[in-house]
Length: 232
Image (cartoon, rainbow, N blue to C red; front, top):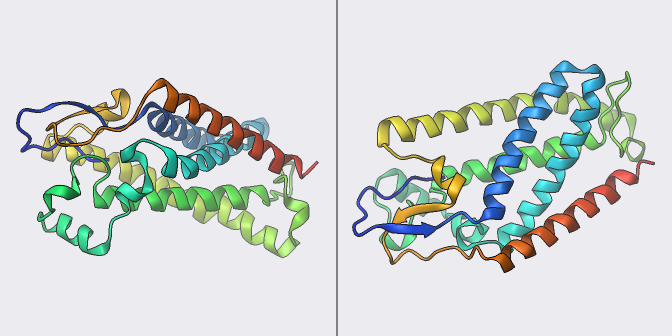
């Protein structure tokens, strides 16, 4: 995420984050925390750990599709920056048409892609993990014991701590932009709007686009349920 443009004049509220993107963001945050906590509690909480993992799987599948079908600033093409654009941002020399102050700035964009990738690996390893006590991934029978051991080790150790690191860095970045630059990154992800100049294009966020998002989410949930059922 990135804050409002401090140099904007004649600013007005423009929709940047559509409701499906905002819902994805907050659900993912809650589910990641739930997954980490339930994993550390263990025992009966592992049932909820598995359920939160399946929900994260569904959210990631949705975000993949929404990255092509969502509102302008939620589309991957909008924040898949070239290295040259990222370097310009770091030098404070962004070009006006790049709108780095609107959606995800280059640093935020790369962190988003990295986090989604790490979560995808965590979900994939969880599907074939085996704690050798009472909890197995639903796709365990489709991999060798050696593959499962490697996946389980990653899932319980490296993967988990990488995700925790990302969470801490994300919170730290929010605090930095708020305290040092006076930019509130949280509010736009709650109500969807930023105060920007009229030349900034708004994201489509209508009843129709939300209905499409709901249909995509339902299809993703059905797909995840089908994958999980392969273990039955």
